[in-house]
Length: 166
Image (cartoon, rainbow, N blue to C red; front, side, top):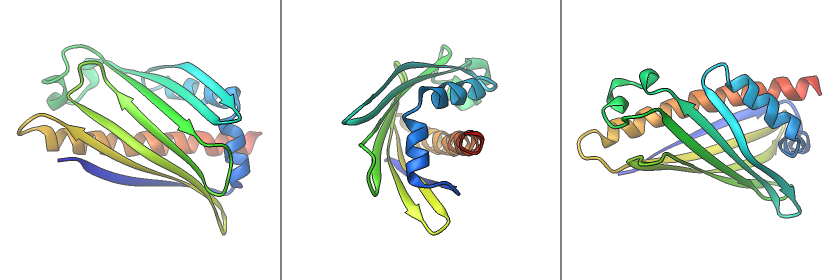
């Protein structure tokens, strides 16, 4: 059974400013550089076209730093490939993401929505985790989603800092 969770990052900036950051390779480079403090990360693909934005990120988590329950399933370092797609700017701007782990026992997908609020804008992410392992699947799903919220919170702080400096 899949588990879902929502996370909303609220910015004092306009949706246009946030979207503009998403179209800037320097923003993604700064975000990846900051995230390298926690684990090895890099950008595999970045493209902005009339159809929107496409980004592919790799996060590498050493097996030794994974919770015990995850180490029981993962026999090597965990390599997460995250693909994000955004529509052209609009009100609202929509997006999707999927995260995959080679030989991973499940999936992590989500939708994103960037929209105007009275104080700036909100970037809401709805995520769904599915793990296809009896007995421990639900625990792993919950663990994935809790860690995902921490990741989204860190990325939102990086985005806010980057926007404030540019």
